[in-house]
Image (tube, rainbow, N blue to C red; front, top):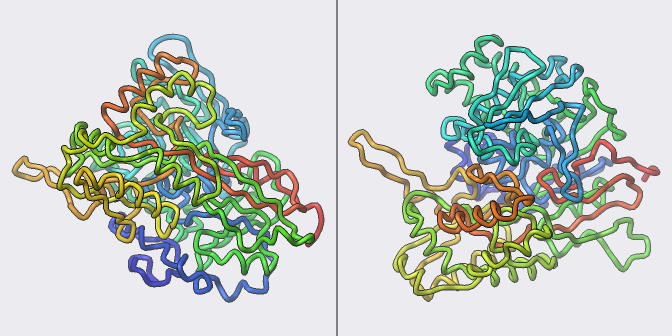
Length: 546
């Protein structure tokens, strides 16, 4: 089925449409309501090493709005690794197989990077500073590239000589405190194949990226934004720099990975891993012995695991995640002004929404009134008074929006998120604010309302767009105007207070996880960061044959 036809019909192909198609992403995963129909009959009797996910697999570019909305890092991080890997305890681990980095004293902040001499893509082409320059330009021109890499807003320049293994990032003044989170999983893509697709050589590409002219960069931006969609998988374009490469994208949306022989680090222990996306009948896969690991977000019930059976091969554990679920708000339409966004936040009962998420997921997630730290960060004791002031409901303050409708989207179907939005509707109703679940129409950050300038100087927005999107966010990398870390309590307090004035998002609660791991698989280490439990997938091993 063509992915440009995104309706409530069963979906047999992963998302392949361009920017226009993204407005209907909320309906893409309708196959989850008909799980058997989404399974590929050809796979019924095949024993795969399977990794089950709670998100659809639309793209391997985690830097796009769609990628950020669907946590594309879960797959993309094994193809396009970060410079610093977030470990299971939130620690940052230098990825020397890709690059090393060091700060240069002085103001503004400067960071020098040295790419591994042996780092290359699966087609044999070297990883160079061109790839990092492309990531910078894409993140710094979000409207053109349809990107969401907020920390790139802090970068003034990236100094790169075409084809070099060294480059320098220069930050804007008073920025760069979170520099280790730059170049995260799934954001440094192969520029050489993008250049080839647009008929440019290496020098031309770098020159145009340095110049930053929107009209000149438009063809590059189009390939960067849409070329890594899995529904139109292009093996020549989606070459890998990580331990795995894509061998196959199935009609039912699954993705099969095999080792990347060109990878500079140790080769993966597994010869093949199949990622089963949201909508897959995991019960059928378990019956076929085709699932070994699953990272299930917000799913309390795992019907394919019989915990009372002494021969049950799986261990199950729950975890409060490092990502924070938030409402990302539009800055156009009903919520165009900070005052309007403050009023909307005032009618959201954050505590009730968090309680509903905990009930639906079976994971004891607590309400969060702050945005810049994980739920378990000890520094929260120093900032919790800021968030506490916003956990309840302030109907008089919300009255500013009386009579208005707020459209909220998320990747659907998702019963837990539907219940969370219902709590929002109930708490806003007394203020006369009509919160509508619009997930059947749209569900990504790309679908948020934006102001469009008209020829006569006025601005317009599409009322069918979303006012808010419910999505999980990394607190360390999602706020480009914040230069505070947990090591600077006062700066963190000031940043949290300022965010409650501008209200770009409404924090709700940590992302709840349920992990299922076959006992015969070793080296699986729980991780709730962007890359998920598959952060060290290349180290997974089968201790015996099934």
